[in-house]
Image (cartoon, rainbow, N blue to C red):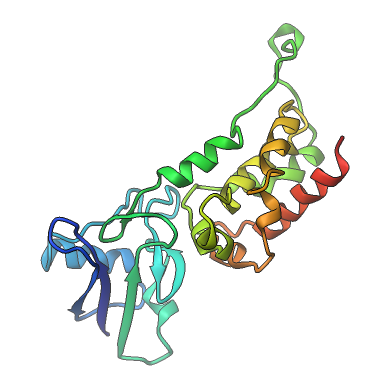
Length: 240
C-alpha cells in the first residue's frame, strides 16, 4: 500500500505559523502502525520531525495525537483501521492534540494538563492508624470493582483534549483529572473524598461536562469516562 502521510509541522525557530508536511511512503503493510510510519519519516526522510513516544505498546500514553481528525495513540492505530478493504493508496493526516500549547510539531506542553491532574490530589489519603501487625488495609472485591475501571488511566490526555468544554475554556479541570478523582473518591480505604469533591465541584469542575461522550470515544484504554463523570456528579449531590 502507498500512504501519503500529511503532518502538521511547527517550529517557532523557523516560522511563526504551522505548515503541512507531506511524505509519500511505499510498501506500507496493513499491520503497520501510524507510529511506525512516523518513525520512517523521521529516520529516513526528515530528521527534523519531532514527536513524543516511549513504550510503543499503548502503555505509556506519550504518543497521543489527532489521526484523521480523532484523538488516538499512534502506536495503537493500525493502517488497516484507516483504510477500506482492498484500498491500495491512503492519505493519513496527523496533528498534535488540541487545547494545549504546541511546542514543536506533534509535541505539546503537557504542564496545563498535569496541573489539573495534581489539583484533584491523585494519591492515597488515609491518616488513620495502620492496621495492627503490619497488615494491609484490606478491601473486598466488590468495593474494588466500584472504581476498577478508572485505575486504567495512563494520562495520555486523549480524553481531555477531545473535550469541547476544555477547548472552550482550559480552566475546566477536564475528563482525565475527574477520572483520577473518581479512582480515589470511591476507594473505600481512602479518606480524602471530601477534599477531592470540593475541587471537582468547583465552577470549572464536573458541571462543565456536557455529556457529549467525546472523552469516552477517545480513550485508548476504553475507560467509561462519561459514566465516571456522572458518578462523581451523583456523589456531589448525595455525599454530605
